[in-house]
Image (tube, rainbow, N blue to C red; front, side):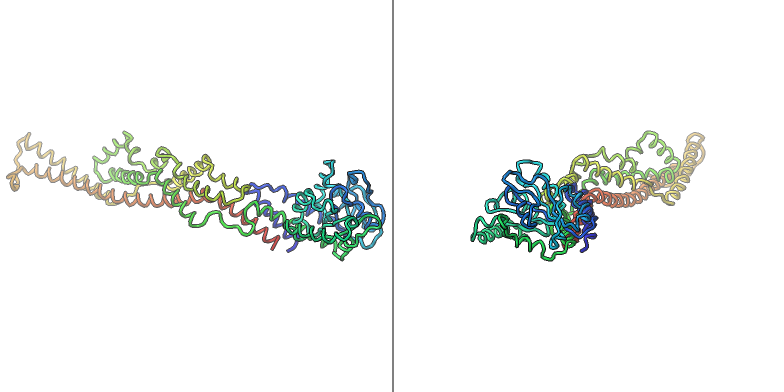
Length: 524
C-alpha cells in the first residue's frame, strides 16, 4: 500500500469521524506532519535519543561521536534544548528539516557511517523544568526513529514506560531501548537485559529491541552503533515511520468508532422492518385512517347529490355547504391536515427510542453522542411530524371524490320523477278542487283508490328507490376510493418515516464503514 493511498484513506476516515462527532485533532495532526515530512528532500532520517534525567543520553551521543557533541555533567537537567548531530555532507539538505523541528543547535561530523541519520539529543522527559518535557512531546510526533535510553536504576521508570513507551511503541516503526551504564552492573547486564525485554513483552510492546551500552570512560556503544548503521535505508525509515503513525491514527479512530475489525450495521434489517411497522402503525392511529374512510365515503355521497338527486339534491347540497356541515363530516383533505388535533407523537416515537436505547451500550462512549441525537424528544417529534406532513401533503394534493355517469342517469330519472310528481299534484288538486272526473284502481285489501293518488304514491316510491340507488352506488365508489386513499397514504407514510427514522442511522453506519475501510486500507 502506497503512502499516498494511506494518506487519502486517513483523510476519508477523518471526515467520517467528524460525522460521528469524534475528536479528530490527533489524526489531522498526523496527516499534516506526514505531508510536511514527505515534502523535505534529502537522504537523512531523524533519530532522537529520549530518556530521563542522568541516564546518559548526552554521554551516549558523545561516545558515538568520539568527542563532545552535547555537554554532560552532574548538573540536572543537563540538556535544555535539542542538539542535532549531522553529517557535514548532509547539513545543507537537512537544514529545512531541522528548522521544521525547531532544532537550532547543530553539530557537524564527518563520519561516513552516520551520513544518513541526524541524531537528536533531547531534553529529559522527567525534567524539573516543565518546558523540557513539553519540548520532547512536541518533537516526538515528528521524528523518524527513537532510542529510549535507560540505566540500571531507571529502566523500570514509570514515566518512561507508562507515559512514553506504551504510548509511542505502536506509533514508531524503528525504535530501540538502550540499557546504558552497563559497566556499573558487570555480569548482571544480561540478566537486566532479559528482564527489561520480558517487561516490555508483558506490557504488550513486541516491536522494540533491547541493547546494552556503556557511555562512561572509553564507552561501549557497539550494539547501538550497529543498530543505527545496519544498512537501513533512510527513506524507508521515514516512510515506515509515517506508515506506522498513519496506522496508529486510523486504529485510534476505528477504536473510538467501535469498528476495529468490521463495521456491522447498528441495527439489523429485521429490527428496521419491525420498528418501521410499529412507528407507521402508531402514526396512522394518530391520523385516524378509519375516520378518513368515513370522510371519504361522505364526500363521495355529497358529490353525487347535485348530479343524481334531482332538483332536491341541489337544494340539500347548498344547505350542506352553507351550514359548514360538509367541512365537518365530508372533507377528507381537511381531516388529514388536522391530524395534530387527534393525538400526541409520544407513542409513535417510542419504538425508535427503545431501539436506539438498546444500541447505545454496544457503541464506544465517544461515539454515543451522534447516536443519542436520534432520540432527542423534541427533534424526534419534529422529524416524525415533518414526515407525516409530507405524506399528507403528497396524498392530498389532488384529493377529489370519484364521479360516475350512473349518477347523471339517476339524476335524469329523478328530474322525470319530479316532473311527474308536479303533474300528479296538479291532477289531485284538480280532482279535489275542481271536481274533475277521475278513474280509480282497485287495490287489494284497500279497495278502489283514485288513480291520481296511486300515481303519486308510485312516483314517491320511484324517487325513494332512485335515491337509495344513488346512495348505494356513491357509497360503493366512496368506500373503494377510501381504501385506495388509505393504502396510498399508508405507503407514503411508511416511505417518509423510513427516511426520517433511518437516514441519520444510515449516515452513521456509512461513516463507521468508511473508518473501517480506511483502517483496512492502511493496515491490510
